[in-house]
Structures are given as C-alpha cells and as structure tokens.
Length: 251
Image 1 (cartoon, rainbow, N blue to C red):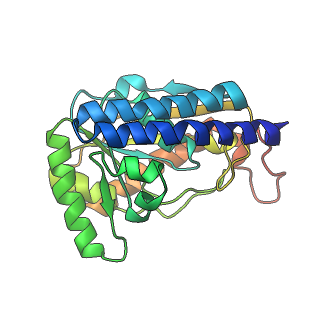
Image 2 (cartoon, rainbow, N blue to C red):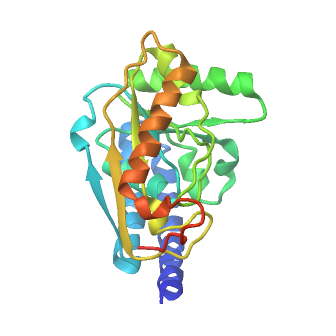
C-alpha cells in the first residue's frame, strides 16, 4: 500500500511541478524578490499537502516561540526531501537556501529555483564558494531573508549522525547573526534516498537562537551539533538504540 501511495504522490509532484514551474519562469520576467518567492512556495504547499493527503505524512512543531523577529541562520537536521519542501511553507520569512549549483539542472524544478534569491555554489571551488555565501548571505539577510544551511551537508539515515561542517556558523560569526538549531525526524516517514513514504508524524523542534558574536565557528557548530543530536534522541529514541539492540521500526 505504501508503494502505491508513494507512486501516486510522485505522479502528483510530476503533474503539478511542470505547469507551476512554467508559471514561475513566466512571472519572473515581470516580478522578482519576495513576491516571486511566495508564489513559488505555493507549489511546495502542494507538495507537502500531497504528502499528507496521499501518504499520511503529518507534522508537529515544537519551540515555535524560539524563532526571533530578526535575521537568523537556520541549521536543521537533514534526513529527507520532506524538510526541503516543507520549511518554506512553515517559516514566516523567505528562506535563502545554500545549495550545490547542480540542482539548477533539474528540469522545471531547478529552473524555477534558479529565479529565486538563493545561493547556489560550486563545491569544487571552496574559496569562491565561501566568498559567495558570505557576500550574498549578508545581502539577503539585510533584505529580511533567513539563510538556511544543512550543517551535515547531505541527508543522513534515520538514527545516524553525519559530520557537522562549520559553514553556517562561519557565516554567523562573520555577520554577527545568531544560529537557530532545528531537529527534524523526517526519516520516520520519508527515508533517505527513497520515494516510498510511510504514514506518520514528522517532529520539528526549534531551538533557541545561539548568539555568534565573539565565538569561533567550530566551537559554535559543536554547540549546534550537541543540541540537535540530543534533541533527535529525545524526539525519536527508538531510532538510537544501543549496539546490538533491535533496529528501529518505522512509526
């Protein structure tokens, strides 16, 4: 049943993304900035709505009151595609994702994303990439956007922990903007590198902003990592069983 529902969901994404992307590309000739962003987020609402209605993937948010009314850099746990779709529909400000430029080559989805105020980088050119993140990140945050960077860099399987890289905290220290750690249990419902979704609840826990002024990027990232990983174990304890214990089952 999950396979059939997931197939219908993939069909839903395919059917809706093409006309929506064409509309975004056309509108971008005349409109840019926040107005184009919120219009584009409409498709992401369709995507998350489809995951709920077709596949039974729901969500609940903890710590909403921790989001400030000022510039921040969001540092979420990254377990699946779900959070990349959902966060722009949940957050009150436009989000500026930092991502590898190869994503711009994805037909329709990537083309539309390329028209938004995002930071796409060439990971093979680290110095150039960092300069772009620092310059554009500062500018977009001055315009009222929030920068979002996944500190692990890529999706991690449920119950695992990737290497936390200090790019986000380096930007935070450079700009003096606080970091908000976020725990996300999306792999409960949408496993890494899979389009077979399972019914269940994705918990999103938003931590308090961590000031960056006077901090070292690596030290600050260790604090972010400690909070996220501790919170992940609180939210999804069955995924973090001791060695030799039975593997976590989908919920």
